[in-house]
Image 1 (tube, one colour):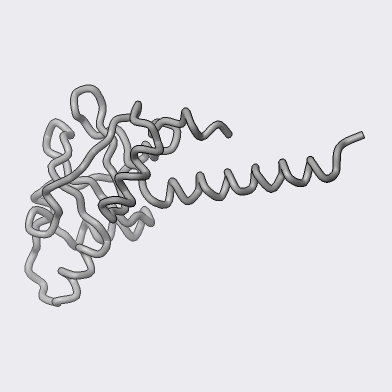
Image 2: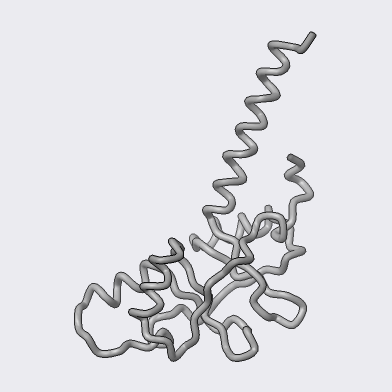
Length: 145
């Protein structure tokens, strides 16, 4: 695996659930549980990212109780950093670490949502790199005939 030339496009997930600002937080929370995801980009009608919702945001709000509908717009984070598929993966990883965030929406040429790259995606990448490294060490110590 050649990590130095890796781009976000090679790491990101493209099967992404999203929400709208007027969606009820309980519906989105149910979708998040069903999809087993911790971050949901919030998009407008043109699929432009206008916010992001994390499982922590959901827990904070739903933990207060109550049954009245709560629109996503009241809970989401509005200041959202995004990256492009062509962004070097290392740059995206640094942004996640530097700002202590768990996900970056990936946007296309017209700023439309095309994917999501998360800390979990980079952890998978790290596991694969470590396994590849172990295999190389094993092969060095036990050459094939």
